[in-house]
Length: 213
Image (cartoon, rainbow, N blue to C red; front, side, top):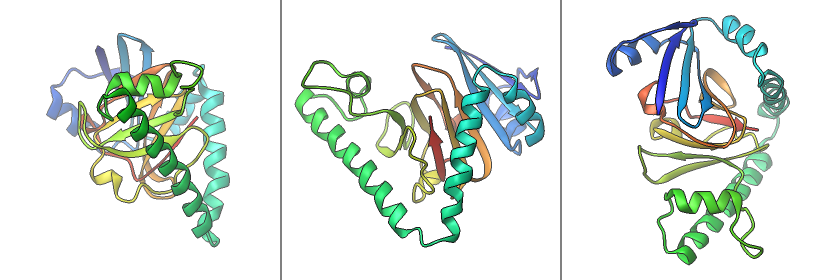
């Protein structure tokens, strides 16, 4: 996988630690899946520069849809949102239980790519897709599943996942992680289609809340 790193549109060729230091402090970081063999990681020092750039991209409308979903969901923070949190926890827990059951039937680890591919796409009439989401892992390349971010289900908190998440397996066109709960603070986004992996530990570990569309 070829990965190109850019800050404000200018490519940087520093090594891993220097690159991470250079990107630390950028409020917006996104990974763009160019194709199956190439990704671009873009960092922006100003949110308004990122907004201007993303609006001009093919995935701009989908990003705007994701932002509108966050805007509407954020209103629950000032209300009695316990029911919302409990409902989301039930949905994600059911998906995780389905994943565990599929893992047992297939005889493969819960974190295997084979399992995730069947979970996303299905394998037969009696094994339809059970997962449409991004999956957070506690370390890369494979570790324990720390969170499931379902498409169309905004999650206001991962319960401390920002301290543990270092890899994100994504299926969806727009996935965004926030470094604070209730979709606040700096953002790390993924733009693409198909099944891709984003290693968040290479940059900034931002996964306190998130959305996926």
